[in-house]
Length: 135
Image (cartoon, rainbow, N blue to C red; front, side, top):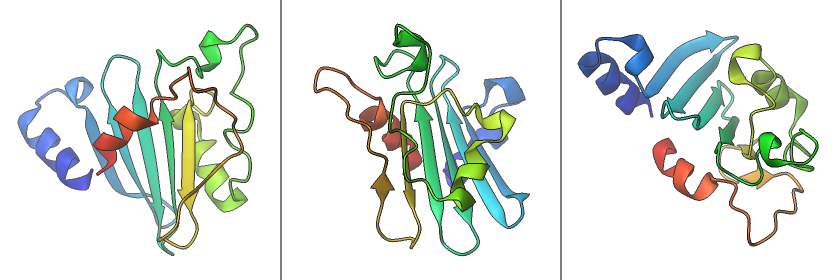
């Protein structure tokens, strides 16, 4: 994502047209990468200086979207178990905390965890196609 952001900034003259962003010093030893396709879908990735990371994504067409539910709200369990040290990163207003269809994190930089969300087989949280932009 860092390479894609660098390339995007070199070939795209208008910031609002960019799809990839990377901020090496987003704050407090944290780097932030973002993919935003301009169509309502996005992925945020935060990397801490001690090797932890969190990925929060949003597929606006997903049945898991807060907007697709009878009563607006984050799909139950999506954020369950997120360590507080990582949770505060996605609670920043610019990250749109409630705009989420999937989330995962790593506290050791090697293994990944996700919440206890029980997503029916007939619903897609968007992670399958949005993760491709995180490589």
